Length: 322
Image 1 (cartoon, rainbow, N blue to C red):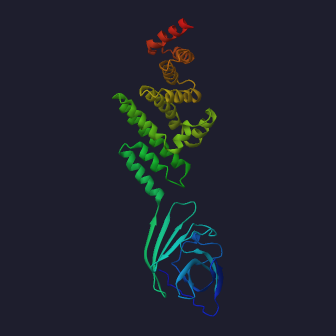
Image 2: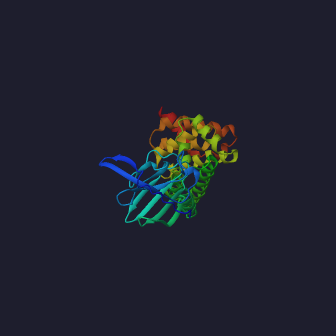
Image 3: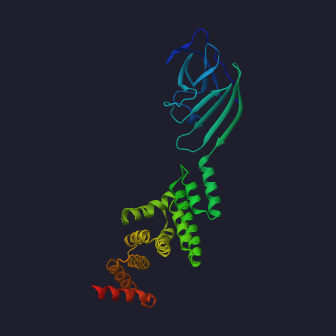
């Protein structure tokens, strides 16, 4: 710890008018040296300002000239003119608690000091990185197959490069899709939907399916995902629509399938899901153009043998009732 320096100035005191009258300060007790990015412009040290009456620390600030102090704020209150960080300080029972947060970083520093009216002693210094902790907890939840919980935790991670966010988004969606397929094979479609729902809680994945049009969607994809990753997104979202349909979430299934139709107009599966969901809602006439589209694309691809018999049967029924 840097040697503590106590400036005593009982003749030359600095006066500041507070709400309840004049407050006289006698000096400043410097705290440990802090990184330059924590300091305001023009300050080389930070300290706790002493009151003249009882030599107790009453505020937080720095010396701008001999016996002249810049008060950042009183203890227990937030400070609004401190460039670089967001500091808070409290004084209770001869113990000072000082907290600082560097802007554009998620690292927080906590320092505890004891004060005996003459000497400031560091009791404990703790550094916390909430983003790093949230990322570690998110990974742990993902390993436990708790996709939604992982997404919520990863959403708390701040100040990371876009490439890192994209990697996280893809990882969450990849795990969710794998788990959803396992559930679907066991015909546990609601469980499959829950996995996929959880993946879209993560902000970047959420922005994908909330895109207003195909341009907005493709802009997000091109800005964040490489080609291999981008090629997986469409089929995964189409599977999401299918799982929703199988879980009887027809309205949401139609919404997601329509989104896939918009962004991936040649993806056949989404047209079939959309048509089936509309048909099951008894919107049979509305289902026809999507059965037609599905039928046309499958024929164009030479995959007529894979077309389910119900497609032709339902088209005939709709045409018959027109």
